[in-house]
Length: 330
Image (tube, rainbow, N blue to C red; front, side, top):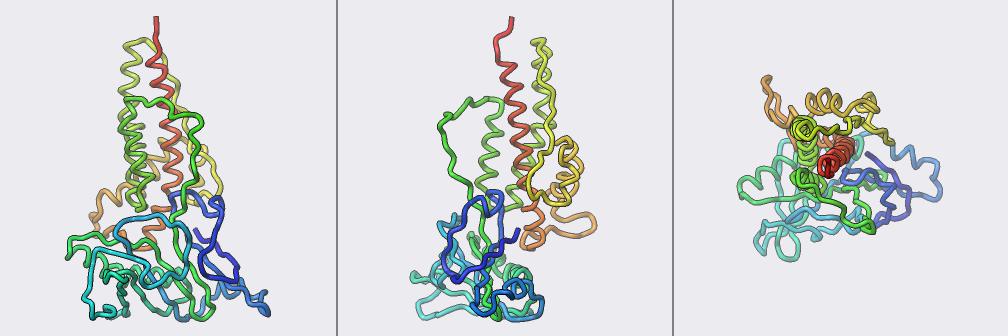
């Protein structure tokens, strides 16, 4: 998801939550500077596809974190990590056949940011080059040291047009508890736990996996258990009518399932196109799922919102079923 913004500043900005996109989804924000004598070319500069220089900066962290504000151009020492470097080292330079990049420390001498310069035709291409070239070095560093290394924000600056862009995890809105906590159904305790694991996750792959396992349990395992109990008690349960909901900006490849059964969506779309890639990792043909590829990140990010909504539809249905089973009957 991409959101261009015209502004005269590229520092910290404030954007209403509803303008960002579905919560828990990564989106890209672009700040296009407004030049007094060249306003009509703002869109042209943003859509320019000629090759030019880009500067990509990644902010590191010890753990995943939420962003209190959106800083497009963060300082070299604003990040943190569990990797320290000697006092007399200003930065670490890594050179590869495809390009070079620099690691900068913070005031505590821990690796803080990574800077990468490249030639590309768009901010999206520059971001992809960063993941393809710098990503493997970060992965290998975490492996060799057996230590977590989190990239919590990536900003891209178009050196020619002075357009800044950054990626953020769309925040969740403030939730009011004026209706109380509601009833916790014992049979669904593992489901509630997995759901919280999903909304807490920042990785689109893990977030999808959590939602998938909820759907799998609710569609494949729980119905048989509930219907067996209903038969013993001679009770009729509410029929499962849950459909894939309609929502604004649903991706094109998912649109055909709007209004169709969640079971069909689960079997045909989620399992075949997403679950099998994660479960198999390396296919029989030898192709591997690379979680560092931007295309794969975006592919999984595009499906987690509808998977989330489907989970909530099914959880609501089975709460009603359990409510029927737990009512006293003559």
